[in-house]
Length: 346
Image: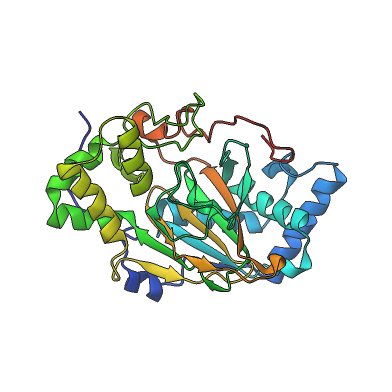
C-alpha cells in the first residue's frame, strides 16, 4: 500500500505567490563573463566538428558558469523549485547557435529526453493552428490557455525567443503548497490522489494505439524516500480514465478538480511575463505550471516562440517505480519515438 503523507511540507518549496514575489534568490542574471564563457564553449564544440545534440557537458566546458548551473539545480531540488535565467541577448545569434547554447546549459543540468513521437529534444512551443479540445492534440502546439500541470521529466526549461503580442503569461504554483491546503482542508482527497490515475498518452505511447494510457496508475502525489513529488495534468487524467473505461467520478473527480482550482488560486499562483531571452526552469516534482491564452503578432518572425527542454537532472531524487514510469517507456523515460525527425537528436 502506498504511503500517504500526513504531515505538511515545510521549507522553501512550499511557497505562496507573495513569498515568491518578495524573494529574488531564484532569479539568476547572466554576466558578460558568463556569456563569453558560453560562446567560448560553443567554439570549442564546433572546433571538434560536433553538431547540435552530439555534445555533452564534457565537450562544453563552463569553468565558472557551471557553479551557477549547479546552484540552479540545487534550487530546483531543494529550494523554491523554480529558476529564471536572464541576460541572454538572443538577437546576437541565429537559431542554430541559440539552440546550441541552450543545449550546452541543459547538458550541464542533466540528461535531456524526447518530448514527442518525433523524438525532438528541443521543441518549439508555438501556435500550430490546432485546437486543444481535439482528441490527442497537445497544448504546446496551440494558442489556447493551458491549465496547471507538470511535464513528465524532472525539469522543464523554456527559452523565450519571442513573446506573444498579447497574453501567453506563464503562471506557476507550488505543488507542495497545494498539498498542504488539501491536507488541511480536504484530507479525504489524498487517498485517490496518492492511488493515482491512468494518464492519456495522446497517441504517443509505446504501443502506437491512439487510445493508449499509462500501463500503471501514476500517482498525483507520491511520497518516496522521504520526498514528496507531484505528477498532475487534469486533462490527461480525465481523458486517460475515459479511455481506460473508468471515467472520473465522485471523490476522485473532486480531488482532481481541487488540485487544479488550488493551483489557480490568486494567493498561490504566481504570474510572470516572459521577456525575450528569458530561460525559465521548473522542477516538475514540486511546481505546477500553466499559461494564459495568447494572440500572436501577424508577422511570422514575431510570433510567440519558446524553446523547450525536458531534462532529468543529475543526482535527481529517487522516485517510486509506479511514479517514475510516466510514459510507458520505463523509469524517467521520454516520449516513445515513433519516427525519427532529422536533426532531432533522437
